[in-house]
Length: 377
Ligand SMILES: C[S@@+](CC[C@H](N)C(=O)[O-])C[C@H]1O[C@@H](n2cnc3c(N)ncnc32)[C@H](O)[C@@H]1O
Image (cartoon, rainbow, N blue to C red; front, side):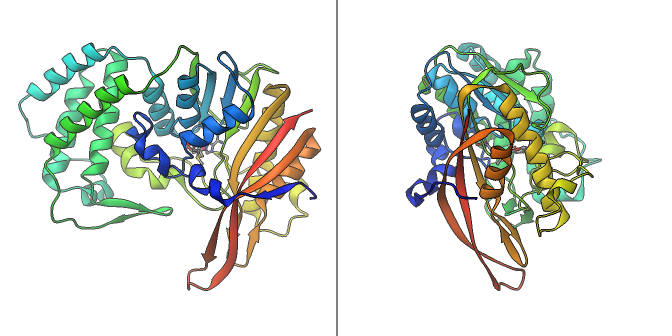
């Protein structure tokens, strides 16, 4: 457990999604659990990646690593287990014909409203929107679903999804969805129009270069479709131990746009199912969900090692795990696992710290969020 440690809390904001809010295309979908473009660009420079290098993000979320790669002409592969994340990553990194999209936009906004049926929607979705808003969402969803070109259809679906979030009464509070009644909900159509206009402008503003970008729906523990020694670097951030149930947090988006209401949970552990055999982590004095997390992360690290080129670099952004009676030093335990696999642990950089409390607001302690730097020897 003796690794070089640095405290660089000035990096804290960069490992959040917040800086992305000001960047075109990056801000097309607010992914609270994401890191920033600025962080990824900093890593490209640190790892001396150039045009034509290959980067992997096995937990690509909203596609920040992939889009930053596109800006730099770096080739990238992203994987995520959640269809919504794969969809957002694909739409943000696609090449578009802006004039064609404008033509389709004109057609969409010339359509006359026909009230759709609200049958079959879950109580959560019905509480999250007013009846009028929900009717607008479903009406435009139908219009967008009739677009023949799949690339354009996805572009407008993401615009619709972002608009729905803007006019929703639901908000994400940590790992739960809460509803707050709002008095002045803006009418849907003008907001949708404004968002489409901004997205079209963004496509002109963001300067990208030619590169290969592939996004897959998959499981970071099983990357068998990727060849050995392919990547120059891995820039990624897995789910944090015991924090977010991604499927629950994005339940509204998933139901409205992906027609999916039931998933196996993805939460503290990164797997789609909990591996039963985590006996090798029995020595850790933590709840079994934590042991399963480390078993899953070991499988991920083994795959990362395999697909990384010799001398390839890895940075993993990860937070400590919080349980009612203890804080689990995830970055250090991951470093131990990585070392046992053959990685060199270059350093652990602490970038954020937050006070964590239990349900009764009693302080449990201070949890760190850190960057774990590894190198394939
Ligand atoms: C912390 S977020 C990554 C955010 C990303 N860095 C960004 O900037 O948008 C972790 C992601 O891991 C995904 N995930 C969870 N389990 C997974 C698994 N077994 N394989 C691949 N992705 C998984 C979640 O859906 C989530 O999008």
